[in-house]
Length: 474
Length: 102
Image: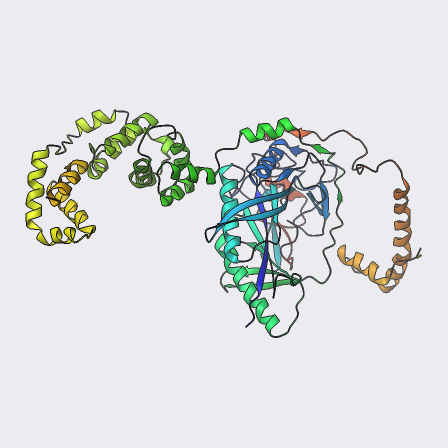
């Protein structure tokens, strides 16, 4: 079978996190009673006029900035005309001629290499009402009508489902971190369409593309692209041609299914929206919006790793925005960041999950956390001790010193006492001692485990490790 | 300049408007729609708007609204003008093709 090169472009719709809708002052909300979040503007009543929500403009500028787009300074809106009950005005207000952002990119890491996914344009538009099909009826809920959206369109620059998935993950992370959208694909606040075509060689023109609409999760984006590539390959191998078409991914079937064949090009008869005069973006506004952009995920990851945090922990921290923000308050301190990340992602995260709390709702101030880290770092607290006192550390204001004192932790820090136990363990385990001398690293781990077992976790691990090593090397 | 549209052009417009038209109507609209287009094309003769397209009959910049909540309609009021409803939903005949619009 011939090897084909896939070409993939992705379009993403993201609902913006505003209090109110794009052109009206009704609430932008999800999960409320049907048709309870609307007014005459959202319902498209004659004589009503749209007024742009300033926050929509700010969030769109923010998105354009983090997606490395150029920002247009003068723009207008356009009417996209179509006849369908999800939009009683019979047109959607969007930006066709003058998208707010253009020529941007998002960087992804594919197989150890950095690749720029080019963004053709991103524009502002209104969402339509939600229609649910039931037998012979279609039910309409206008709560979603007029929810602000940005649509982000890439160039056809991806060559695999893996790249498309990595791009979407990066995009989601960026938009979520900047509070632009909550990016919940399961609730429809982030929706993806993929355009897929294949060709035999890079010098060939692009093949006929098919669009897969409204895919409900990032993993399904990957699966649907793979299925679509296989389908197109099979057709071309049989020497068949096909028309451009719109398909959707059927989760139960695990395959894409035909929605409609595009007989003629869409004829949306776009024209400038006369109800909204020109919109101007000033330098001052762009600067104000930029000040509001937090440290981005890539920069966080790099900073954490530079401070000694493992790649795994750095990624885990970035995935948890609230822990990552908390960690950021420590970056200027002189502490053991490896221990700090282990504590946050281990015992502390487990406590937070169990009690359904955020780190900000605990009593762990920055100063107390630093104190805790240092006590673990110098061996005053063993991991067992830590488990014993953690609840107290996180739900009252006593100093770490007082907590250690009150909990009666008396770790064996007496060299003589520890040495005595270690010598006994060495004598009891000649096999492990031999393994150690033969260069097997895990032997020392086993012996340390025996020491901790014997002392019921109360030996200062740092001291015990030093003594064990010196005794073994005698 | 042609004095009428082709039959196909008229049928395409009817399709976009989701209306059915008879053979006689097609012939009638071939002439009438073309006359309309000719009239609208006169706009192209207007000089003086080379730089920016004129999108509204005034040149003010758009005003922006603060992101603050206002008064909304009750679901009952929303449904008052709908021919049919099912619970709080507005009901329309089933629409076959999905995924139009946004």
